Image: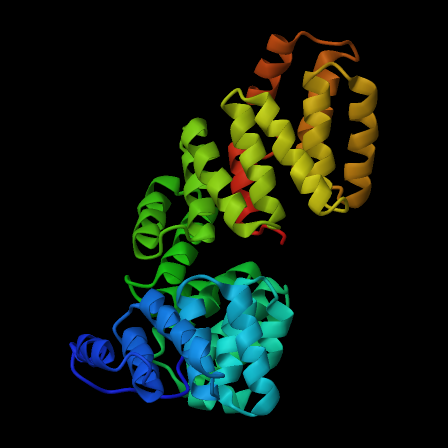
Length: 380
């Protein structure tokens, strides 16, 4: 986020202005200056309180409304911030800083189409970090080619912008441009959360989960709660044979991503391997509600149906899954379970052993590796 006005002063400017306000509490210019100083000194609650005091005395001018919007952003009141910046932009539609601030609020509110549309070259020229926000929004919209084109163009002009290097690395990863992803992640350096997540995912793709895990941990230390690294950490734990920890990390990643189908499927299988079949089915059903055209949703639920002895429903789901994707991992597993059961309602313990020991294809891919592969190329 950015401020459309700048305020200079010493570290104690807010305290000094607050002292003056005690002597002259209704001084509007003083209230405005104190609110701006509060923002500068990372006290958004104080800024919001001062804006409210101003509003009780007089209608807010644009500069103070802008302070109110910035305070709302800092306090996590993103809907309120968006309304304020929308009103301000109605009077100054070309203001690049206001456009960026509104784009930031919309992106956090998951309106990535609205955020991306606000950021053009004029905005990026005034607020360079807007470029990374635009690429992230394009990425979330699954417009990978557009995201790469914009990001690479910006990076050519700004080769030392490490934030953008990390952002591009994740987009390239999802676009299956693995060499490009590795190159940009390495250039982003060891203090870039997105670059570290990319390198971790690439290690997972190379069947090196023990080397991937510390990369995800380092990424999360830089950006706690980062969904891609939570996903990667969970996949690494699953591949290392720690399904309970994997399920916890994958659940956190799924909650962050929201509509990231691969994460929901992976956390369901982690729960399955950990023995929590109720949670496994819940996660698969969540994925199905998000997108019933994703084959792994149907295949995963089919495997649960086999385990429950409902072979008729399982067979229908397997048929749907293979119709959507002949290479569906979970449908292959469900089919293997049905064949191993010989068409009978096998006991739960027997199906469990079959599920955990049946490779999914001729290469010997296991559940864990299949979920790692799915997570790396996870569909949004």
